[in-house]
Length: 202
Image (cartoon, rainbow, N blue to C red; front, side, top):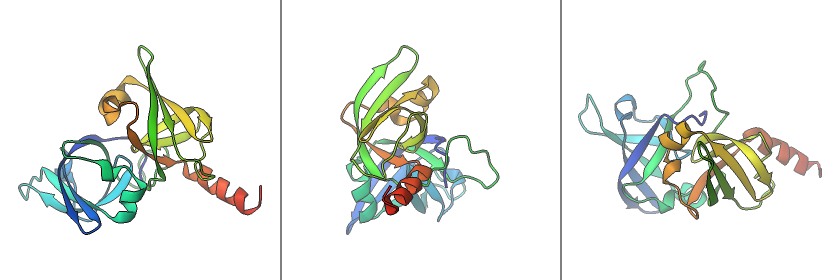
């Protein structure tokens, strides 16, 4: 489980295809704190550390693998060498839940349709595929590229969020352009409620 509070931004240094999988080598200042088999969210997608790179006592990078199912549901298939990704390690039991409950299971890829500079904050507009599971409500939670954000406005196929300067500068949001794809994880409570109502015909 994650909280959507980004710890670090990392760089993709190498991409290696193997069958239908892609292995991503990642450079991060947090690499020395990781271990093999650990779960780490990359732009909101939970991936398992399968190898560490660099000196044994002070790794500078690591490798994760994305399988076909992950590549089909997320933006990972579009990643290239040099890309900056948002990074969060899994939540420690008993720690503060500063964001919201984020599973690291991306529901869909959305697209940035508008970025508004509000002279001290930014408003991001995103469109996404229509689905009964893709529920957003004003003042509810959404994870974009793994970042926990509060919804401002919502429709069945779009929403907007407002970003404070710290979030803008310390994530990869400042690199986004209109038309860019983003990973979306909708609020788990909203998904369960939508599914239950759908089963009851409501």
